[in-house]
Amino acid sequence: MATVALIDGTNGERLPIKPAYGLACNGCGWCCATEACGVAREHIPDHPAEGPCQALEHDAGRFVCGMIRRPSHYMRLPNDWADGPLGGMIADALGAGRGCDADDPR
Ligand code: SF4
Ligand code: SF4
Image (tube, helix red, strand yellow):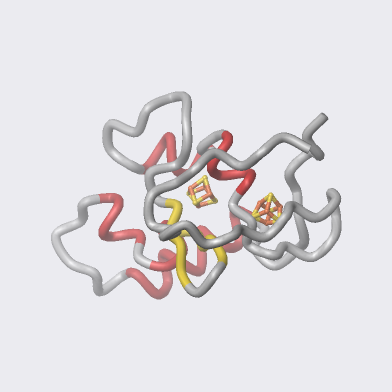
């Protein structure tokens, strides 16, 4: 399996190994470190078309989606009052909680 690209914020912690496609997501971050999804590319101002997602956050040994957690921060909105409903809509659009949807690396 390919190694996960080193991402700032891990403090050298060992990252979870990607589970097989369709199994429960363990927050390994491989998907979003490899390629930013459409939500990131379309809604984060000036997000590069290639490379890791700028909204990928590391917390307590796993990676989490910053666009679900605090979208206003990444979308550079003037306030965070809509973070709850907006994050929920983004979670639904991304299929959060439905298992690993990233193809297995070769
Ligand atoms: S969807 Fe898969 S690759 Fe992405 S963080 Fe979850 S387990 Fe890792
Ligand atoms: S927006 Fe969230 S799901 Fe999409 S690539 Fe970034 S961290 Fe991953």
